[in-house]
Image (tube, rainbow, N blue to C red; front, side, top):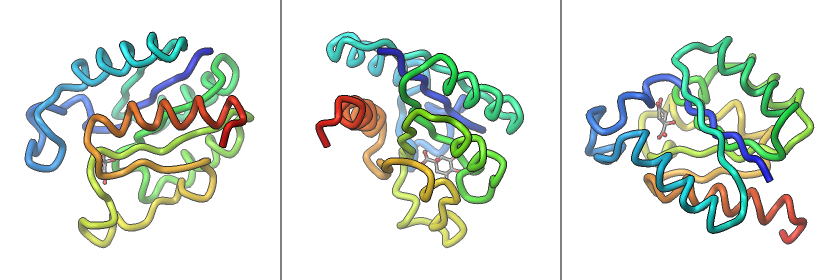
Length: 146
Ligand code: DQA
């Protein structure tokens, strides 16, 4: 089973970006842990990161063509990109939205996710373990167990 992980803008700065909010792990650290978890769960994670909306949209389309599920942290695009929402709606595979921080406990502009209505679920506020929980949730959903 192939799962795509797409990280959006500024997530390449993890490790040094506001560590009190996002933690000290780098994106590479998180991807390594997620791939270990994926091996344990007998699936494969393909990870991508971009700071550009159009590239993220292209990868969402690719995920729809080549993967069985999508884990998506769209960063700040979460809060206003209808184009990314439409891309998620356009694919036939399930998407889980992940956030390191609890977007609902932060500034009011982060309380809205325009993606929320087109994903099967969200994980927010649990830091890097949230990616692993999102992966588990996605597999659970794909197996029809939940
Ligand atoms: C984020 C939360 C967003 O509000 C923010 O713009 C990010 C990261 C998170 O993982 O907590 O870039 O998606």
